[in-house]
Length: 119
Image 1 (cartoon, helix red, strand yellow):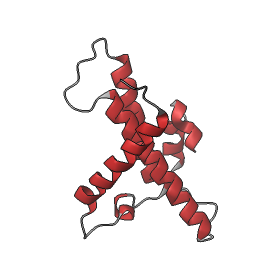
Image 2 (cartoon, helix red, strand yellow):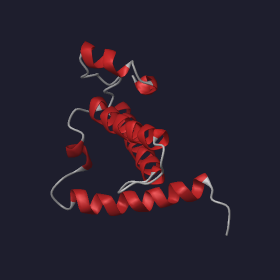
Image 3 (cartoon, rainbow, N blue to C red):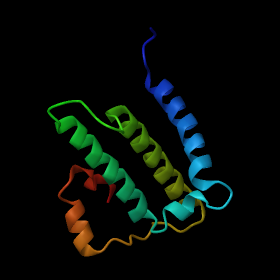
Image 4 (cartoon, rainbow, N blue to C red):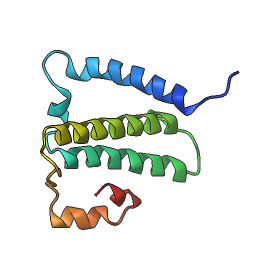
């Protein structure tokens, strides 16, 4: 068996993203429709995957019913890439810096978690 590399995982993530896009978007919805609140929407999805990862790592048993740690990490990588594409597209459109739609209360809640680097 050959060694798994980050490049191989990212290539598989690209294939997964393309397949999921067909299921989720079809011809009716765009990717942007799934992230109506810009930065906040992307941060929410990444944060959700972060919490899932933490839950899986903290479990005393590795039995899971649906999404494995590997699935979660792949999804998180995809959401991070989508967020980066969103930010770069906004920058190209000269709408920079992106405006946060996060309330002060939400911002304080995010600060409780290590993922606050995204703010």
